[in-house]
Amino acid sequence: MIVVTGATGNVGRPLTQALAKAGEQVTAVSRRAAAVPDGVHQVSADLADPQSLRPALDGAKALFLLLSGDLHAPEARPSDIIDLAAASGVRRVVLLSSLGVATRPLGPSRIAMRAVEKALRESGLEWAVLRPGGFASNALAWAESVRRHGTVAAPFGDVGVPVVDPADIAEVAAACLLDDRHTGGIFELTGPEVITPRQQAQDIAAALGSPVRFHELTREEAKAAMTQFVPPELADDTLDIISAPNPAELRISSDVERVLGRAPRPFSNWVARSVAAFR
Image (tube, rainbow, N blue to C red; front, side, top):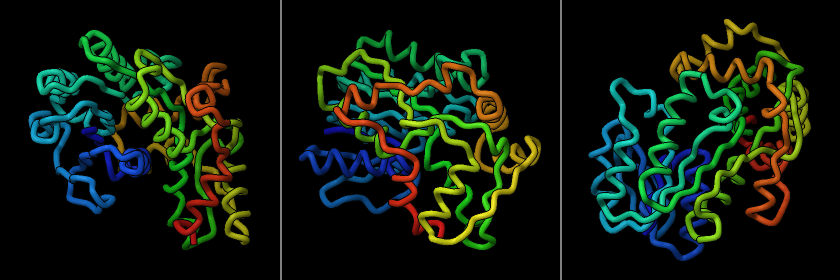
């Protein structure tokens, strides 16, 4: 049995589907009860309280660990989840980390994630670490403004990074969970091209078949919007990257192709599959 945390999210949902399609027994973990594919067991747990995950780990052979905001919760001890997994008999953990651990190691959120990576490597478990850059699905933050006003509002409109499709992350995660060849690997996951927010707005307009105006936010405006959903330190770390990406953050990684045997999907592919959210 494989446990998927964050199972209702942009990575966890397609990962759960892929594992179920592969014939694996899957337990999908989310904060609240949610619809899951046929044959998948759903468990509600809050990763800020690692002990709440104990029932889901009973009998599991592998764990996909997506910490999200739980990493930054007051008094959170995400490394305790790794200890609990080992004590529960889990043999393999695939951790969704961040490219910033390598490219911006001193950012507050990166320091915390680096500590989790270290705990996993030293746990005695089989492991793999996924370090994606920016997600294509972050564009969903623009969906309401596109629907209501035909507008994308974002900072640093002409500064690009190679955003990665969450479906590609999910497929790499499935490969790491199922295939021994990827054990002990650290995989940097990017899309196939550097793309700016203004270019993303153009791709959304093309998918919709109607104009989308781009409105450039100041950093302060962008941070105010982001901190409605993420901690301030994570917002600052993200804004530091998207305002002035360094050469490592602009590099197109070959790791998606190395694991999956195909090139990563471009942003336009993600938009074509997600266009209903913008209508």
